[in-house]
Image (cartoon, rainbow, N blue to C red; front, side, top):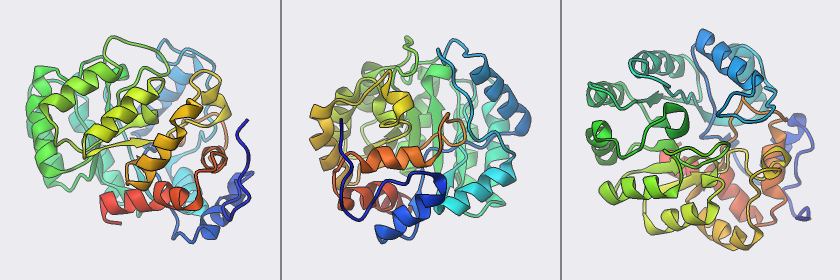
Length: 303
């Protein structure tokens, strides 16, 4: 059992205690690179999929923050989340471009939201990705599991090249969790990096469950990072616990700028505070928490 550190950053027991957590660390707030805002009708369909424990969920998954956009943004602000994303991802062709219009508009009218976009392996993908970059997109999201495609799909080669040249980060759900597919895991992602070694990528969920392999990739490639989304929470650790013998490497990578706070808000079955509690209980030091909860994202996105 990991013990609670006795230092400044006491784990927040509930959401109301989150501001005190980052204030004691001397931070200006939190930067969360893995949050979701979607067109309302699509979001309702996503929540219905979680409610049904669909094939790519695989277990009961109640949504904690089933609120409208304004209420969710207000809650992030109460928590002190100063920078967050509107990550969207298509599950079929001819969705991504319209999603980009919505998420970019949402960011333009929502203070603190990083302009977010996505793509799918289809004709025209390079064109609408270039348009999103021209419109100010600062982060992209790709969900290989939900999208059902390999990152090395030839239709995406020009897209990855554009993003690598632009230096714009891509949050990639590349790991097998929660359900293994033929498109996920460290091998397909490693093949992508071999083709595009300059890609700025953020591996979602620390690459669960293949943590060590994705830590290896983050160590090997200068621009590869990982986010903490859902890892170190009781819900996630039931199925995909992080190996204790990899904690020293996680600390090293965090201090090197390569581990960033992610939460999956609002699609989580527990309070937001639990993500921060899980990180604090690792006892990797306040400097590590400062880097992960703010500094690393601030450097990457020039916050």
